[in-house]
Length: 433
Image (cartoon, rainbow, N blue to C red; front, side, top):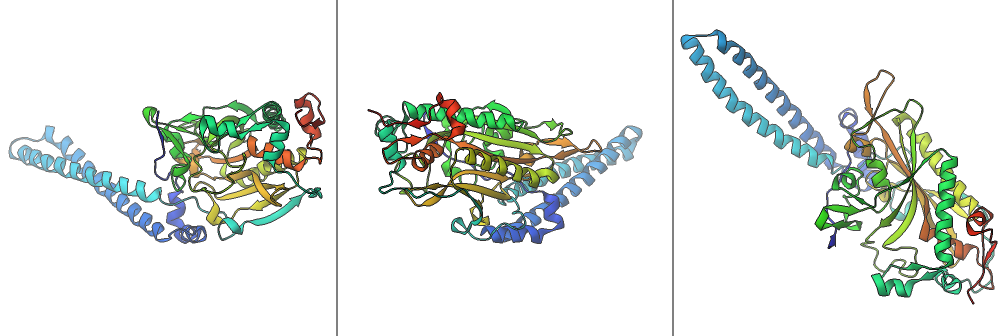
């Protein structure tokens, strides 16, 4: 089985917005650092397609009219109608070919434009995120501060050397208490999700191209994705993909409110382009497990739902007693599907900085339009739903942070109160003898 990556950008913006307010889409392109001329390319392609539709419809209508007249005609009139019908058949075929080409041009131009950035998103790139708040107090750690690799070795919780021997760089084994920590974190995350009314899901880690394309993961970041060539399937980098595609081609009943899920799956990322970044430990790896929240809602509910998901992420990190900050991600660092994204970054004492543990994105109708996920409005008319996602627990990063943030000078690790029931009541993880 050979793993590769491939694909084209997916997900689509609302063409009605483009036609009504193209300057808003151009402004979104500029703040993302993308080419605003792509908006004009799409407008032109859309206009050519609409003209092609009108021309083809007019020819079909004329063809239909003549076909009704032929049975009633006779003699030279019938012969003339038959000649016209034959000529129209050729014209219709040519018009349909033109329309097909125009459709393909719109398809290509449409997928070149990422989601429209929400109002208020900071400008800039990776280094321009805006800190919205800080939660918790960063304690004073006695020197020397151990990083999570050293702590993992003391506890015999992480085996990176054998992970590399078996699978290569950026792989690992969680052993003993490390494996117990994973299960404890997943159980705590799922319990919290259930408290908030999310439906627990264990989702496929392999998906069809349509699911990966529809969620926007085969665009600028396609190089991050593993593909299984023999089966034309992709390994997901997040259970967001399977959860988003769960209701493909369905009309949802959202009359009682949003549909919310919490999905667990292994996640796989090639980490292409990250050469030299976070090579030590399990912060940035090729495989990890994760609990991901996902929501389908009405578009007008999406902004409030985004803050709700963020609130649940903050609550989870607070339960783990981790100091963290919330940042508003800059437009140039947003994924193609996201209109806005908030990250929660926890304090890593060995690095003396905050690092991302969770994120939540409002994808508005961008994914659902491509996946054809709809709901019925108050008039019973189908409308495109909005989708949102939020990481509740990315396990390896969270373990790394816990080992560092709660370390003691003797090499032990204090267990946060919320996690103790899932670890047999233990208050401290002691170094292995």
